[in-house]
Length: 239
Image (cartoon, helix red, strand yellow):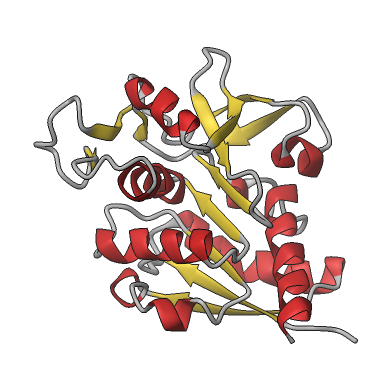
């Protein structure tokens, strides 16, 4: 029996955000090339704080497009997927808000802030800070941790990925996040974190790069394919 996965696309949809405009073709490719039955629904960040509604989905993807209209909604989407064990992918701003949500709700750093959302956040509290060099329109090599979910999905030790961002993880908080269970499984050549995973979760990945920008959209990136497959598995398990 084929099960349809309901995927929540959390973000403030805009024709000016390239990753948003790529999604229809990617979703069609997942259905046609991979045989994955998907129903995708856009959830504006203002509506993402409805835990009961979001928990009914089979997968959650927090998309780029920051600053979000509702930081609280984006964080609630991350937390709902994490706590309800719903397959999750966060890309670019989604990655940044995974760090912020985890710092606040798992590490107990209630003052944790995002420098784009709150520019006056004290340096010691900023979990997400401006990158030393903008990555808008850039691509770079990612070194993948052996045995990680990302490495298994990509089937390689390294991968060249595309970015469109100006903010990333504050190195001073990486060890705190790691000590509380968040695993950093992808780094650039300087050792700066680019992928985060949550061991023990059915599927929980966040990337600073944007896998939705890979190729021409006819062959979904392995991480996107992985999310869709995990969503279908979740739908079957909860049917």
